[in-house]
Image (cartoon, rainbow, N blue to C red; front, side):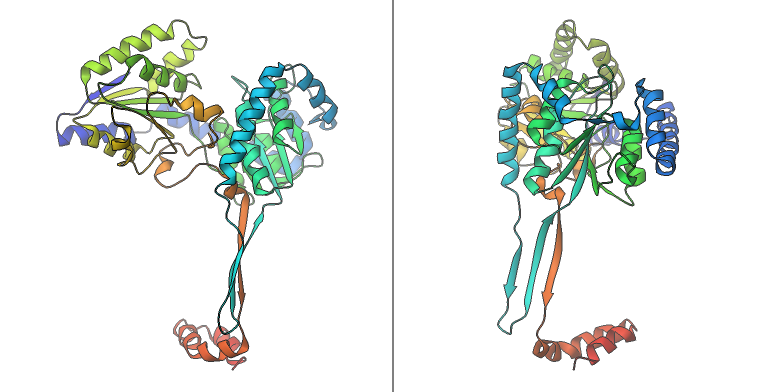
Length: 434
């Protein structure tokens, strides 16, 4: 794991350069570029050949031989899957579902209109997107939580048609708990297809899989590349990258809890990023010991070790103000503040997808249960982007209704503006109404 100590402004600049900026094209960059080209070929094939291409790539990449009429998971299959899931797990999913609903209902805007004294009407009409596709990954693990985080905000927004896709990576189908979550959340239709081919099918539509207007949900590099390639015809949430966490800690923190936060993030996959920003070198050493100790008993320790070795870092800064400054430049997906006074650091944070205050508030609470979405901006995008909310599943239309009298009164201003831009037809449209 990379370890950086900041003792001067120059050291801080070097830390920023190491953590935030790529200085050379690496083998990883080359692999990513190759995956993008592969995704481009898949998207093109699905656009041209439809279901046949989806079936071919599903066989090739997922090892599942499915005919187009087998893509969809029928309601009876979902019923049967739910019957196999532990009732206590179903109850936990329902409680998480309710928490997510309550949170997302709070940030919905309403349509409005204002009538001015002269009768002019101005306003906004807010309506849900008619259809969305949600992608639920299912390669190295199964994510019922991602089902809830994708579908519930769309339902809160009023979306009528929600199409879920997920790879057939569990015995040639979708894991029962994922299907149970889809039923609880309210998916309209579910298809056992994944990868770039699923994204292309949602974007362009096939004979079997309906075309949608927006696609959300995280996935691997191929899925992310495919979303980027189809965004000219369909809206997407974000080009999600590997999971990431920044932990800001002072010496009051428990090294074991800090290590646990880093381990939890690192077990997602080998590309996950965990960064500790601390005010003490001795504290970092204690966290390193805790990491080694805790990792011994974890089922995904090989993945965790690779992630920490490749993308993990510990940074010793001069004070908490510098810690907040570095964190803002990183713009992490998750930020956990483990300090004696978390609010002091929080008040200085301007860029983070999700902020956890205090040692009791592990990122895992946000992953599963708290209510805010765990679909968050990654790759420093939190500096300018936001978590997925119900508002992302709605669209706004401006409403304008002028009276003839007001048009005549403001005509001179509009004519000046139109003529300044040399748009004579624009000017004529106003002149006709004088």
